[in-house]
Length: 201
Image (tube, rainbow, N blue to C red; front, top):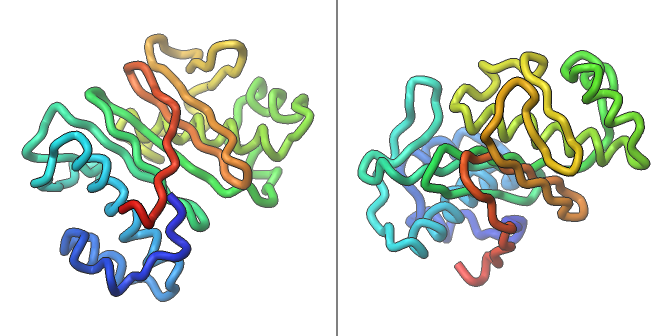
């Protein structure tokens, strides 16, 4: 969902107190909009599933979860003007990134040789860099460890099927959204992303 036109003050009654407190720590309007917008999108998705009374908490690694719906898993991400949310009946991770200039030293340091080779051999190295980034980060978030699981401790292979070489069983979704790249990782089937209009919510 694009939150660039979100009216921050109008949405204050639509998010949790914890989210409000977090958003008020940001200086810029864009960051405030991303912070509240991502929970508004999550609440919309949960409401579509019949969940109208979510109670949020965070685990020991800081990953949020629902205390009153233990069988529902979700994950959130945001970048530039967009927020993303994934909801599943098994652990799930999502990452969205705005495609902009690349720090190639970062790529060389964080990626395994085969991942770096995939990027260099792609017709658009910048696009491939963000493909690899959102796939790796969505996997890290799905595990619940986030950046406690270093980028260079596992290898993502992108062929006809996307997989983590060191393990089997997880599913990946990779979507080019124009100026953004979206990656999703789950233990179950992944459906196509749906772009939600802020005006619908």
